[in-house]
Length: 358
Image (tube, rainbow, N blue to C red; front, side, top):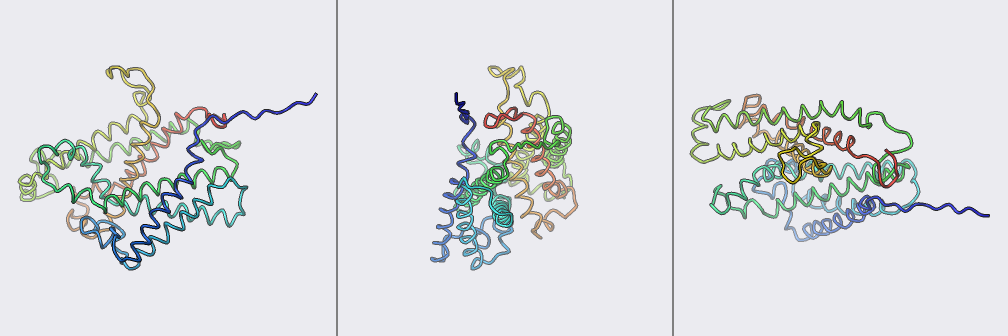
């Protein structure tokens, strides 16, 4: 009697398989738009062409006549690379695999951390204030200047970079024999175990929680009328223009973020606390913590690259003064928060529904 091996159906998420086609479509669309921009000589909204924030971007260093064809070429080539990664083929030769992965990660890095710059972080930080104050005409800004084509292009680049990073990661897992869904292989890595992630995750979360509090301290002091790190004249000017309250809003946002960061290593970060009516005792969905924390970590790192490389930043903040010193820690903040978020994911991911490991 012949025995037939039955392969169990894969019940895990299909998202890892869709990332490469989505990345190819998204990057291809933006590559065509960039190509049209190059041919027409209009429409490139970044770098020197961005009059509202282009000076805090690393792209300010690239002339428009160079940036436009470069942007189009990089996007279209990345779209082709993502399309190649969508094919369920066998493991490619080592040099080709290294070249494809290297180009994919480099492009994803540029789209996620170079193009967005500090404008994305500013909008995310001020968004609650803008939404609440819009009916009352405060803060006194022209919303058309804030939510413009340049800002949309930054978020589009961020989305494309994340899709490409996910596509490269899934492709590398598939071609190395690891699970496409969770990345686990037959040979485990000790630092990714829940116990190990708990240890180094605590350190990362602690660092990521302390840094925003140092930033918030100065802004709270200004709101209280204390010129901590600045002159009395400058504080009076900010009070007259209302900027001191905008800083207070950002400080409050940073403080809430610090508290939520601690939730990545606390029990209430895994189960909703008792005082949350209707949710008390229920498990916190992993993505509810991971996705927002990842966006903040990426935005913080991207903001620091352009901001700290701008000479005007050092002139306005006085370098190592109390005004600028907290922002000098932003790169460490982004990396620490990203590490704490990854540790939280490793600790709570459980058994993979796709491969059964864990």
